[in-house]
Length: 166
Ligand SMILES: [Zn+2]
Ligand SMILES: [Zn+2]
Image (tube, rainbow, N blue to C red):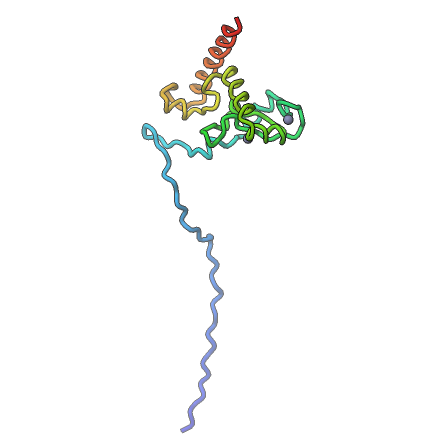
């Protein structure tokens, strides 16, 4: 008997289903810091500059380098982010490329900027509400508690400057 030829039907290749979501490798997450049962945002977030804080700096300085009035500016953290300096306006200053470079390379200039801020805003010029809350300096992390504290510091700082000049 002749072998019957039975063509095997070509397997119909199913169109590959596209995954709806790109599969992501699970990120290794650093454990977030907590304090009194609250999660504290990571340093990266606290150092970043919101539109609101950026706007406040521009209100103070205009869109110019604080030193040479060049109109090209970069926002500089007076206390560096690597040293817990936050993205709050009291810790920020607009600088041109050259003065910004100087603020990172020249220790004397960097320290001078910090001294000026201490004289204007007090020792906590670089801090955000979480820093103050963790130091028990403010009762909660509302913007109001933060601003109330910082304004009192400002008054104290100005008084100190006045007595030093007598
Ligand atoms: Zn400049
Ligand atoms: Zn900088």
